[in-house]
Image 1 (tube, rainbow, N blue to C red):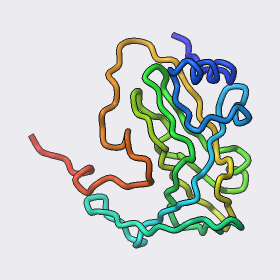
Image 2: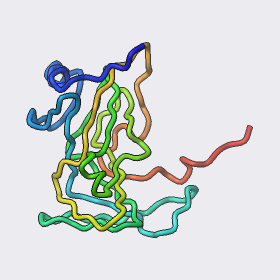
Image 3: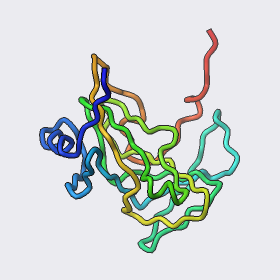
Length: 178
């Protein structure tokens, strides 16, 4: 089976037909085979520098001012997309812009693939290797859409409906013995 990635023209057709949600949708953000996503003005960071996967993760929140905010190395920043994305027909994948990657800004390095049926603003995982200024509403990356094959149940989990940057609850990483 070949991998089928939708072209920009096809993405637009699927949005117009209601099979893909991109809200708000701006045709000027379409690329040949993707759609540019933008960062909302709200960022969150972990309150502490020492994290435990079995504990809750309190976050501090701040707003990126219009003149930008300098991201610092050694922190994980959680942002969200301006747009809400989703589909029951196509699998969404978010990647960062290569132009930002060449500046040392890395996005979606561990969770780039979405789930069928989920529709929300995506949490963006952001890390920088050097001090870099970002701006609210900036184009941060692209979303692509891949055709599914076979019957797949829609995602009904916690993260498929959350429109703000969040971390999993402490019990999310716990395992049970049988």
